[in-house]
Length: 323
Ligand code: SF4
Image (cartoon, rainbow, N blue to C red):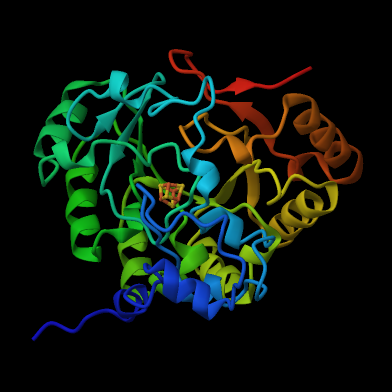
């Protein structure tokens, strides 16, 4: 019988029941909790263990707990704010920018972030396998970089990633493969020898981009797992989302980006919130966002300050926010 990898066993311990999570966190005040959310709860136990007990006012918890605020209808907040559906070239390929194509490798994630811009994506219409995607990539000679996204590409088995790598390896005009993942933040055990080996054996240049929003997410185990990737000569970058009452304070962002550069992680983007239905309680104004970036610029090395951007559907690149 095939052995189940340790990270899959750990993933099974994720909190998916709201009542179990509230009991674990000893939360007494439950009136703000949405007990029946459309986007279900999914929170790795190791992240739950970092959350302060008996309060909803915790920067990790706020990113994952469904609140009744999500039911509020706010103007401008829509199901697909970044126009993903418009840019589908195949069931699983999105192409928005020149030279790059993104594969929605899976619908599965290590965790469910309440502000996720892809939480309403119709993954159920996708067929299994990547035949159509490979055929598309083979034909378009302008594509140099393939972004593996989802969901989270590290939800795929190593066997599936190896098979996909082999197909991409065979396409000569593809030079780079980029991972977009939040998996190491929740389940750093995923960066195991087998995964490292498949990275090592890939002939394309690899870039590894994590999604990390708060300094508490970057603990010693997470950093150690990312170091293993860096040791292979693979650059590790980070994207963060600016979120009200999670990381919208000078000190929090300073600590986050300082911690990153101390570990050799390059802060790449700080995203303004994508206006997904039910996420208005996370919105930080552009004026405040700009003030935060200015503070970082005055207090950190230039390379430690990410670009403040937002995605506007139809534009040829992310849009820098400058006031
Ligand atoms: S891990 Fe990424 S794709 Fe998954 S829910 Fe969070 S933001 Fe969305």
